[in-house]
Amino acid sequence: MQILLVEDDISLADGLQHALNREGITVNHVAKGKEAIHVVETFPPDIVLLDLGLPDMDGLEVIKILRQKKVTTPILILTARGSVQDTVSGLDCGADDYLAKPFEIPELLARIRVLERRISTTAESNKIIIGSISLDTESMQVKTDDRELILSKSEYMLLKALMQNAGRVQTREHLESQLYSWGEEVSSNALEVHIHHLRKKIGVEFIKTIRGVGYTINKV
Image (tube, rainbow, N blue to C red):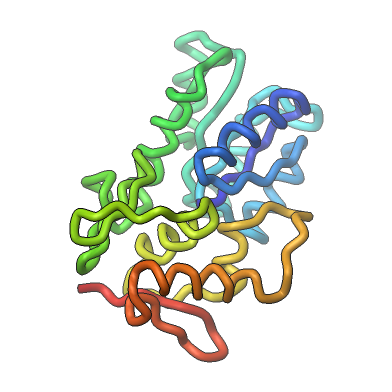
């Protein structure tokens, strides 16, 4: 999953990036509202975490503009404005959820999981089960026939992206965007290496190669 963090407090943004990265979430960061609008339109993330007190424009205006442009990406407001009226204003503008600062990382993760389930093919559960493979997005456990598989963070993130979109071909570019943040140095064959390692652990037939396009997992 790829998240766009819109936050002008650099130290807070760095802390959130590190915390979310540890949970297998790819985070890209911008500090201004206009940058956020451009990124969401050009490189759509799965979820937007949005501060309201931005240096160039109010976060509520960012939400209004995105919704006017028919952007449906889930938006979770993170802000020090904690009054009931602030919450109502944010939700009325089109935000999907509201979390007042200061907050605990476990609560933020729980709210992200709720939004993720809304956009997932398995919205009713934390578990994605395809064939003999079961992936739990909350515990980050992957099992095959009740035997736990030991995956690296990148392998887990890649398998999760494919299983959440089972039946749909995922391009190389899209999968890389789920694994790596902007500016992160990536070798040209990194994705293929992760696919190779996954196939060794879960079976060579589970992930299908669509030549010249990307990869997919068939629905069962």
